[in-house]
Length: 338
Ligand SMILES: [Zn+2]
Image (cartoon, rainbow, N blue to C red; front, side):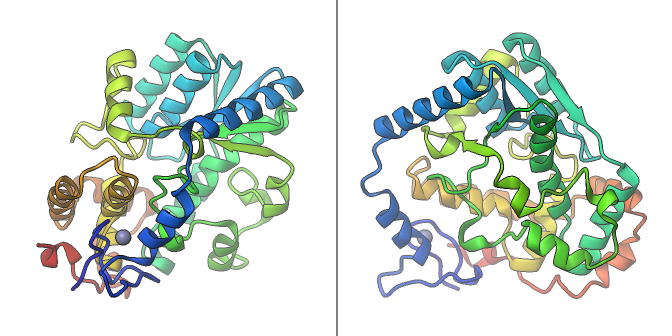
């Protein structure tokens, strides 16, 4: 198996191909897209957008989870850009204690309110169950819900602008080539007609409705070095990772399960994709990235027993049902990474 000479993504990554020099199409497109990137200009543009948004509404909405990116967004909005904000938080039913404490500490220290939207958890767990049985992964309903909460809070307060820490389109976008498909259209295709629009109301935002809002993704405009961000959050807000040391998706008790299933389905997990994105952006040195990928992916090959039990319990599924699914056919690509 071959790997991109730069970002180390495996050639088995969907829609990825390596050129004759061994570089992948993502790295080639990245060079093109960001060759004239000017961080000073990008931040000026951001400040202009934030000023315009603040002129329209006194308060702005920030979607937050207690994870790295959105915690850093909250920090920047309050300290650097001095914005009056309302945090919008989605209870996805697998909340970790670490994330709840992170949100509490941020809200207390930075003086802003957080509104938590808790959907009907019976419906949500049923959706996780259906997605798992039909696709082999279960993150799509949560991804939709985490965005939905911003629209709900903004809509109910007559606010047009929602600020978030989604990395899509930024220099550290990791879901490259649309690998993880968590969008509205796929959601609807997978659930078919099994849910009423009332049942989905708290979770799903139709594409037309999104267009009525002004979305600002901070990672698109700002230097976004994960390791620097973690250090800052830990020092300033006693920001906590999960008890097992995990620093990504700390808001989710079953994040390890999501990676475990992805690795079995595709041969690699989000952890690999995230390290590759950081190598591409120059935040992680390629040789160090190689060591990180090897150690992170090797850990994922072991079943995260405790976390899987939490998922099985809430979705009323058995191990046998999951093992019988037809999606888990890939060998971990990390075995071939030298
Ligand atoms: Zn590459």
